[in-house]
Length: 315
Length: 280
Image 1 (tube, rainbow over the protein chains, first blue to last red):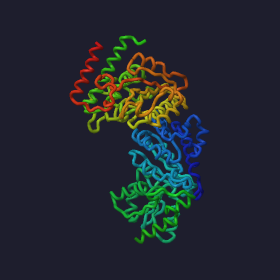
Image 2: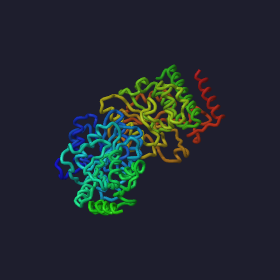
Image 3: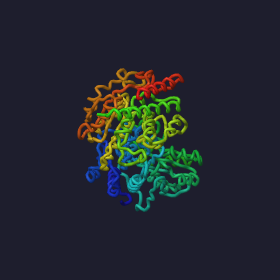
Image 4: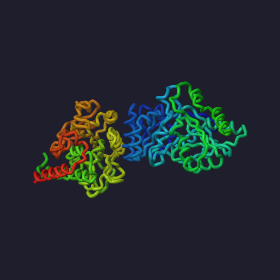
């Protein structure tokens, strides 16, 4: 992958699962009529006996995944994010979380991806829901390199994982794969600075990145952190950023309530209270419309992030 | 045909299971007694005759599994596991204490032999279906049994799982519905319509039977004939009496959950002693 290249994250996800399945025969894929839209058609073609179809059975499929995991399989269940998170929440909490099963729940087209399809299909509460489940790892990779590494890490991690994936094309942000030291529970320092820290996750990372570049060109010492794991949080990296820059701005395609910003705020409130701004969706059902316009409606475009940071620095 | 001596032996085991249920309730001072007692014979048959298990190796990959989907039947599960030797019976006396290994609904990580953590209704069949599918994918001949409540069948998620089990032809999956006809608010016929039960399961691709859930002859014959049809999961509607074994509570809705006054507890002990006397 080359820096700047645009990738369809669903396709990248499907390729990464297939690559992992080639070396790990325990991996099975469960589809709730959702494999083709999740980039898993190549997996189905390559491993038809390991591809299990359930139709639009968005509660039951989670229980089946849990049961499969008890027999040593490593099930990946991928579907449009709300339909594997808020719809079957109790199944994810009890059958996967409470039962501590090695299931990988993948919410794709997460965030405001389905801006035009409206609030039923947008997924802006999934992080809030899933990060309350004890033992659940919540990953939200923000570029194709992070995504590939997240899939590998999810497959190798023993325990429940929620992987949040967008669907609009996203740019490669790293020069080389080796520049992305992905590890569960670790954030990645993308730019260093001393005045303010900008933290992006998931599909919002590229816009946080663009905003940081603008701020830097304006002479502002911005530190940019990618947070591809929301749970567990990278405590050391975040506390250092709070201590050294004194201001934190979080950016995510999620409700401000309960999202990545909330997770960071919970940490800082406890250990190092630090002024924050949280960019995300407020307490409302967002309008439907073109993706770029819905992002703007929620203050998530790079120029709006720049404005938020500049106002914060004046405050 | 079940030999008289074998039947007597099983009845003695069922009595032990009922005594364990009472022991749990004494320890915890309350419990879901009705739907536990109604399944005493079925779980006795499963653990002592039907399932391929080894209590000394609860994680043996080739074991048969039992998922108690109606997790409030935890008492009969604990009672049967203790009777079968998965753990010492004295552990039953910790029921209801803080952090005990026998919570009000079963936790698979707390006790050997508990295959799934259930409690919220309508979860167990999907989990069991996944087990059956996983065992088949692994080439193992093991089977998965599921005990469900009749009132539980109002949960739509069960019918998702039933459809998937039928679609995937999970021949190694056997459901037993405890048709005791009562749920917390009253007789099931007044609360929600579940019949025709066998036809419902058939429509989802299952083969079905109906049996007397307290008659070991009927239970062993029916379970012995599973799978009823090649390429289909099996569903058994077990006609039972809620609170079976305690005549003062049998068929009474208020004994779904029981916080026994001292005199009822004493009566229950006399009732079980009477069963023992009739067994000789």
